[in-house]
Image (cartoon, rainbow, N blue to C red):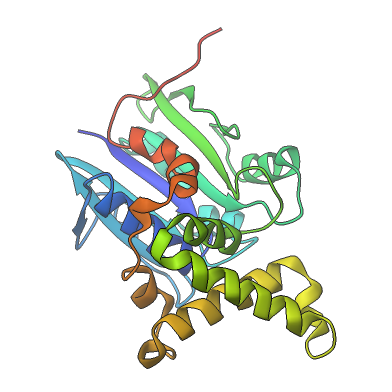
Length: 247
């Protein structure tokens, strides 16, 4: 039995990843988790999943820049030593940063283990009984090879899904038309992407326009997106053996 911990930025990240894990990789929703992790405030979001007696705790840390705070408040570094955790995966937005900077920021919050972008790696540490144990880690930076955040990955995914392609392309054109005079703020890439995703879902399902993003996410067949499939490929190893590179 494996207990795996996945830390992501915000609620929308948790909702999309949870949908994908359940509908593509066969995980099931559970009410509680073996580590006793629960939300400490309204910004955090915890979902518990299981598959073949393995448990996965998916934690939305509360937003950009909140990883270190979440790790400290939930005693994650102590849990890594004291609890039977087999892996830690971190999913974070690229924004305008380099992979090196993103990796450094995450590793600065971790004490006994470290993560590497785009690669599963083994960390050998001592548990609370001074026995050696292995914890696998992975850092997934979104989107894959360009600046931006989760919204850019969602836009790319919608472009991949035949029944969504025309609408997302028209919404992108609409948002572009607003940049010139009406809403100069949309010249900032991340804000334009957020506006694009929000507009797409509102137009696609007008009666749900004022509801949460989770409602919209559950209505899209994300399994049809090849770009999302490739981006989320590391998730296939949760609950399984990890493809550790040896030197």
